[in-house]
Length: 444
Picture 1: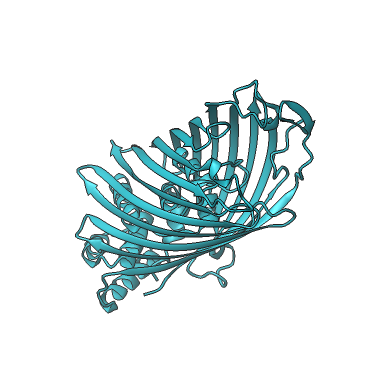
Picture 2: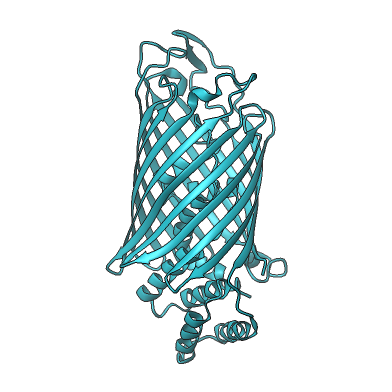
């Protein structure tokens, strides 16, 4: 019952972008050298907190978890901005039921009962929520399970350069790696959360994800994660400190181990503006062994900073702006130490029939030392432009008999990456298409 109105709200507001930006705090995989069409890393997320497509892809890879306190804070803010929006209130009620917060839920129910403009369907939903609150026994912990599965197809899986040439030890050779491939992925996450007073909550999450590449094996891996997070409110600030541990087992690469901690937050200014910010510290290590004797060369420590701004233009249209900076220091400096500067802009449309997000992000990477295995005469510098468009739809809107509660999502997305660099290896273009399904279940 608690998810009956969730999807109606998602179709009509910009909240999904915020939620998925927060969801990524609870699961991540680290691979020091990456291209944007492969596994999305935690640092890409931290540098693009408002990029819905990127955050959703990351959530699909690592499994999605629920940060109910942050969701409630956002919904309460939107409820103040749009006091006449019934869908926001019903969605907020559904989340309050999930986290066993009967006091807040009953207050909203009593307020809605006084309205004279409720549709019969909305009134019926309200009565069902009220009955569920009466019948439910109090529970300190809320348990949920999240599952996801998807497929990604790309026309340049190995970031092959435009001219199919590459620099290797100061010589130009052929870049003969495969270009076309597809990847299947699936994830499962188990979350346990409990309220701490009226303003705070604590969350523990375990997650597992799996990826299988069709032609090659670079993206064949199993990943495991453990997260601890605390959400609270201080003044007008919603704050979320967190700590995460992960292990990724790659079929053709060394296993990697990662520890990360940080804090994220947001606050509202006026009725239409909100600002988000974050800091993270990450320590990643590769498993040095007899078959991967250079794995620890990319062991690194990363500091990341983010700043974002969201603007509600209308109830159907919102915009987002994100800025990011990160500094990566690796065990072996050459080709591994770099600074990244990011800027992104998003335009979001909450149509009644679907949620569509369009974004464009630019990333500038400045490396600190020449990589002699590639080109000893040039200090690598890259510029990457990433364009994304994503559509989210509830299956129940199309086939009510299959998904009567509208709790199963289908997500379609397209991404185009154009990379320009002063070294030929990193001049490439790639197009990726993805299809995924996701669903959340309450376990108690």
